[in-house]
Length: 236
Ligand code: ADP
Ligand code: MG
Image (cartoon, rainbow, N blue to C red; front, side):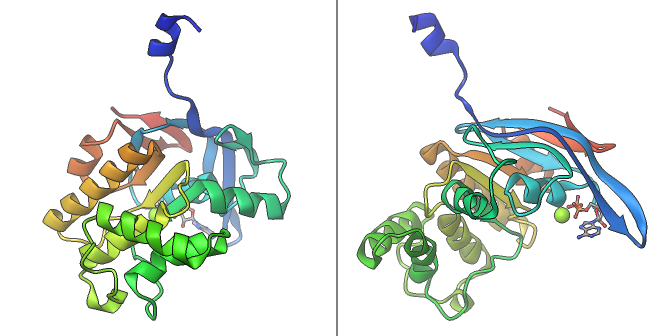
């Protein structure tokens, strides 16, 4: 490879949606939510997905995260075409390569912060000592080294979301999907949590797609996308 190419070629897309169509059934009638939605997110890149309620943001994120199937179109995760995969392979691809953060943390209430970050790693085959070691490092990255033994109920809303971020990247996913991760937080806490999300995305060179209603946070990402008439459109 020439020097010019190696310095100029952009990092590979880790998440790619190509011509995704999806309709939902609403009260007996068909509602077209996505009508040829396409997007690309590269390593280390953060893209914001904004738009009114009901425009299809969660639908798109769930399809990108292989939680839901499109009616047609393709989702590539780390260049792997997910469309042709059987259920077991899809689940494996999701577990190994995709991390999720939701508006409500969905942490397991009866487990400590450390255990919440250990569990996905153990489900992925790590032994508990390795998992605990990595969980401790990830919680330190989000500033929670003094909270590892706390259960979610003893943590603030912002701390809970920081644990959820550490958990989302526990298995070193290539793609990080967040659906209104700060939607439940006051503006200052939202800014802080977003800072951790951004730092971890850069540090791990993950491709992040973040649904948000927070204009300030959207402006801090690499670009801003919205869904218009079922298509993904770049606003900035
Ligand atoms: P957003 O996240 O942008 O608010 P959604 O993706 O949740 O939008 O929803 C897009 C549209 O699809 C909305 O009109 C919503 O009511 C509808 N919808 C979402 N999920 C379902 C479902 N499981 N069954 C039927 N309709 C749904
Ligand atoms: Mg939504």
